[in-house]
Length: 432
Figure 1 (cartoon, rainbow, N blue to C red):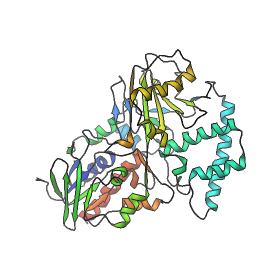
Figure 2 (cartoon, rainbow, N blue to C red):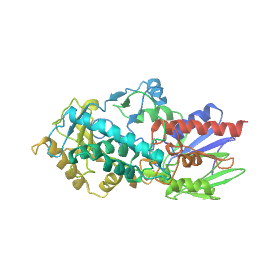
Figure 3 (cartoon, rainbow, N blue to C red):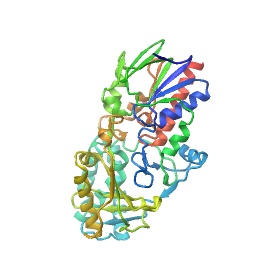
Figure 4 (tube, rainbow, N blue to C red):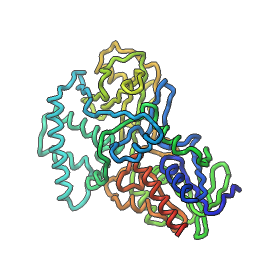
């Protein structure tokens, strides 16, 4: 049996929440060991370099750089970051015609008005409905032209579905905006998000490929069992498992978690955000644009591409997808998926464009260590469920991760700050 020293804490999960908590706890005099099920650290931060540049297959952005703890870390570790400008976008219709800025501005103004109406509707309701239902009720009154409605739908996908990783019909209208954001633009890491993880994890004791199967807790301590048959004992444990893993019941708790905690896990949902990364022999799209948009006649479709050639120098486009559409792509073969994306790109840039030389894809809903991309509040759940998920159980079990963040859920900084919050709770418990 692997025995740890006095006042020791086991952290389950080497994502940014677990790693940030570990650093803080070590500074406060705890002995810390992290157990990670994957064969790498970082969790949903996963940088791939097989295409000759850094491609972040999971988290990719610092959302709002002003006062963001990730900005400070990028400075501390001397990591290059680069702004992506959402307004620097070329948008096309289904015939491949470029939409004028005037049309897009008019559509966005209408979109803004509709969002305001939907928010007013939310305030008047006695019970929660989905964002999709709220949207339909307002659209019925506004009666936009079919052409305009397509662009509005595209904006909804771009601004709401991608942010939440799910379809509008799943999202709680009452709680969809019940979070906070840092000011400033969004930035990416041209050389990879994993640089932040490597910097934070330096010197930490981390055991990889240790998939936790059981957590036994009592008033006197915790025991953790893994799939390889290892057993670890500690004074306390911090669980940073993604919501999707908690929902899958792959980890047994003895005794069971309290009913309120189990309900919170059931109530909250896990979104899916998948990427299709295509490397081409040459650039055939507007290389000075950060994003390319496609307003399809049959939405959902591949509606948004990130132009990585602007940041990594290689001819690479990344299709960004969310919700049921993203999930449906996971069942396609590589050939089918590539053909589906190429069909869209040929509509935009003609039939003579070259085939990609390499493709990367994600299937986050099937990932056994996350079962999704990030959490969202569905109809019937509330922000209180996040608070319940975050709350310690007894005096030995603590919880962190993006799903436990009421202020900044579904973000890397939310996960990071939740780890620091949990470290504070552990210190209070054991050092007081």
